[in-house]
Length: 494
Image (cartoon, rainbow, N blue to C red; front, top):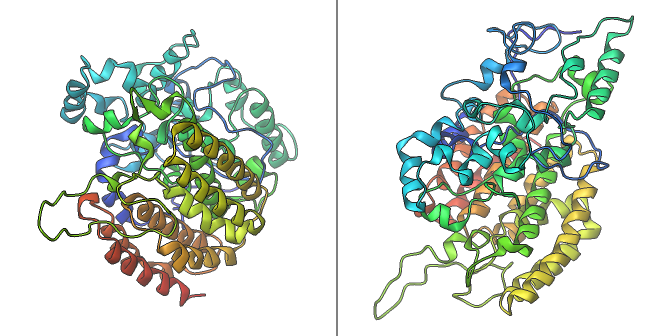
């Protein structure tokens, strides 16, 4: 077994990411839903619900905080760091965002949003608590499932699952037989059977995270356009990069044995990224087809491209065109398109990892965009067909091992003209730079390139992030140039 003291992740995302998303980080729970630990190529489990469909009993963060468990001040444990609670509570970093999730509901911005929405207090409003606290999510289920303080914010069990059925086994430790690695693996499998969520499965992890970071059918877990108009940050999510920001663990031989049954088992970051894109789009299409798709007589604008409406209006003799043509949206000028940020990334991944489904994805994407111009019934029907393709892609990604060479190929695919010409809006461009950053990190973690070589590209990545930092200042042509510079630097290392 190995010791963790003093080690750092080799594949940390650039510091610029935290700066670029500082406004989201400050509004904690909507930045990160503890996109957690590691990944396997297993599709057997369906997308998990973040709020515990298994009916287990919640025990609260305090049950994890013992000094012999996860409550140490220093990460020097022999099997796991054991300072995970301290990392979770970091006061100003993305890694501590979940612990601050409930506390931020009392700040001035949250109270401003609450007043705009006619809420008495954001810190007690079910509309907010479903994502900003584990307790709020439990209460939304309408069942007594343990006592969890609101002050816990988004606690351990929001992601790992209610611990009542497995916590005793979890802290029992290993070392009672001659093969502690095998014992650790068997205990982990037993805990999974008792309700611990299999977050090493990318489909399970993504299903947990998107409930708050994209939305769910549950109460208090959907940030509508009305909530954003009141002042809430726009929802944005990329599974692998957010997982890295929230990682309170390290991947070593102990981790490999416990999660994957082999010392060399590690997270496949490319797979995590691809599955995350598919699950986010799948959830978006599911919600669009549900009652979430409308609010009163209006469509739910959450699902549409913000920049298609949020542009300056000019009244002048010679109008200035403020939009860019998008090859992926064959729709008339002035017709708001579906927000296809994940569709664009999925199209790039499909060409590499599931070429047999790529043409079907393209055909059904075009049909969906056309159907939105007709009526809601047509759009819902087309969304269902597109969702079938997306589900098939999710399964294909989750059952495929991605190599280091795949990361280079995917960077080329994201920067290809067929994809680049679709990066005309802020949200799709943001997904593109997060994707390239994730793929660069995967090249480092897989040993394809060195940490030093990756550091030399950070300037280009940071400039691409800067181009999408302010949606009001977004200029597609400048972004495409910045991203192209980063891609060329990565390509030179191939």
